[in-house]
Length: 381
Image 1 (tube, rainbow, N blue to C red):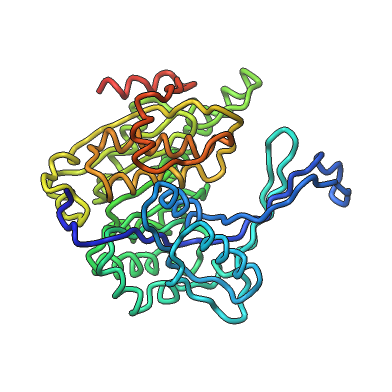
Image 2: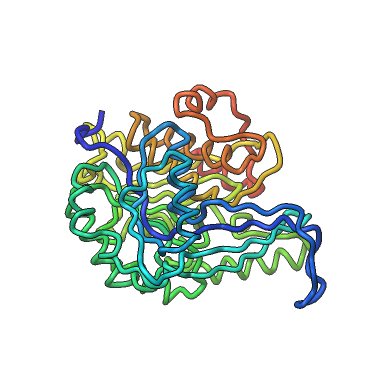
């Protein structure tokens, strides 16, 4: 049982966009070429969509708290959220603003490009989302998750700190996710002022490495291995176990209670703060020692069908937050469970099942041995 079991529900906030996916027959041969598209579809995109959909598919209540434009794209995105069973009553519509749109041409080899219009995300301020009325609502919620401030220019730096501080005052647990920003100085300036008010941080390895000054060294290694082998190399293939631990410890040093670093196809690493820090969370177990001072690595699981990893990191976040808020799972099991949610999300042959069904399936899932086998050393710590 959790310390404050009278609180109910998870709130997902931050960047929202409508995705237009184009399944192309071929690449453009030149900039003004014509390419035929076999199929196009609209889907709900951004962390507000992917995190909330994964939580809803687990059978849990979730609401979105953000702002959209008063346009057709906003109408479509709102319809998709409602169709998925997501509570949208706290979504604000802004006049004379376009809702953000991502156009994603997907090519026959599975690769894609992204044309992204910031739209409403470029003008939203934190009072647009967290009005006095919405802050009052948060006083009865367990957790608020805020995603992708680097793509929300008016909610960065001190503005993001003010935003997270206002949410923290409601008593809800505060979770934060980010997105890629290759400039280390800019990324730190965007996020670090808010860290004193953040309880859970869920970056991927690239983002975590950028914030801790490790990215340049790791990317140099990526380039060297790619030239040597001629293969596609990602940062998770070259990182050493001790470097992941060091990155996690550095982020814990910012005062955050729980760090969950996703490692793409190699799984996830979770580290947690002291018993005293964990006890400050409204979602903490009655015995905070169950979550405190943990260092947990688990690889992910095999897909049954073709994989599409779009939004898999957000799905991991949704599974992780759901496990912490609505189950009695220890941190180790919550990490494995979140990996499974990410796998099911990416697997085009399956969908994320209800929570109880997925818990029952966990022992039967086939573990994916990471390409970077050195990461398995983290399981022995």
